[in-house]
Image (cartoon, rainbow, N blue to C red; front, side, top):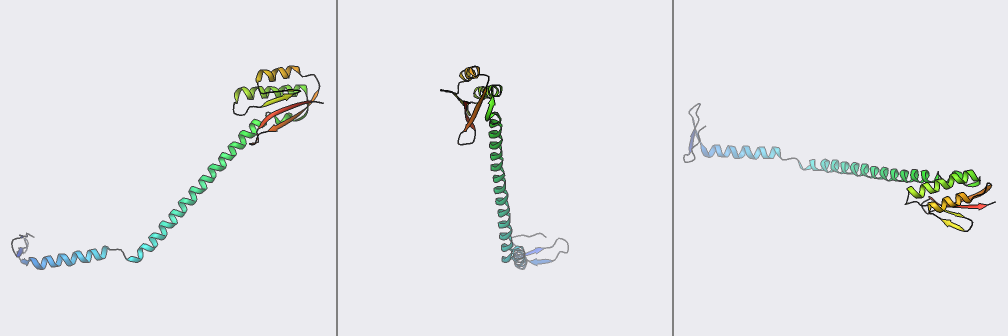
Length: 168
């Protein structure tokens, strides 16, 4: 349809009929209003949307919290494994032991102190206490061929941090 804004009428190119522009404009306004009214969501639709959004948020936070707790549990497990690995170098030798076993224990202490500066193990024998690897080797060489009592001390985190060797 050809519309000339300066005229009151428009001519249809197919049927050559004339249409009064004001009527057409009124029809378009009514049509636009009815489309807008049809497209407008009902007010009650916002309630289910809010409920669904709340449920999604709750699920998200629950999963996030669960993942966080799992991560914390994994950290505790790693700590426990590290503690067990450290302590298993010393705990089997606790109690009454022959010289050969104490030599192995002291070798473990020397290796630990050379490789793990965070978890130094000190050795006490007679009147001497040291964590120096060379001095621990000297203690190892000074042991007699007999049995000794081994006592282990632990730090606050549960790691062995001191070996006490007592004569029987």
